[in-house]
Length: 131
Image (cartoon, rainbow, N blue to C red):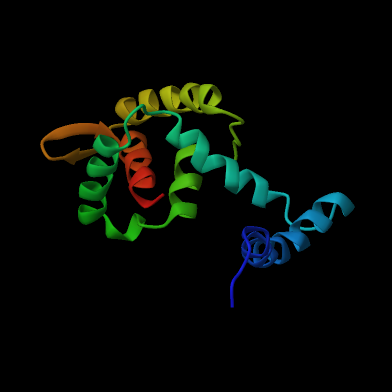
C-alpha cells in the first residue's frame, strides 16, 4: 500500500485530534479542571528561569538522592509556591527571591555537594530534574 503524504498526515493527526478534542470542548463550554492550565504553564515558568537546564537538573538529581520523598512534581510545586500561581517567570522569580530570603532567615537549607542552598532553591532544581 502506497500512502500519499496527505494520507500519512491524516493518519498521524487523527489520533492527536481525538485525544485533544475533549479538552477543547471542555474549554469552550467552561467545564473541567481549570488547574490543568495552571499545571501546564507552571513547568514552562520554571524552565524559563534558566538559560541552561543541565546544571540545575544535576543539582536537583543530587538533592533528590538525599531527599527521595520529595520526588513528586505536585509536591514540589506546592512547596515552592504555596497557593500562589505565578503567571510567568518574572512573577516566579519575585516569589522565589522572597522564599529564598525566608529560608535562609529560618535556617531552612539543604547541603548539596557542599553547597548550602535555600530549601526553595534546592526544590526548584529538583523540579527541573523531574520535568
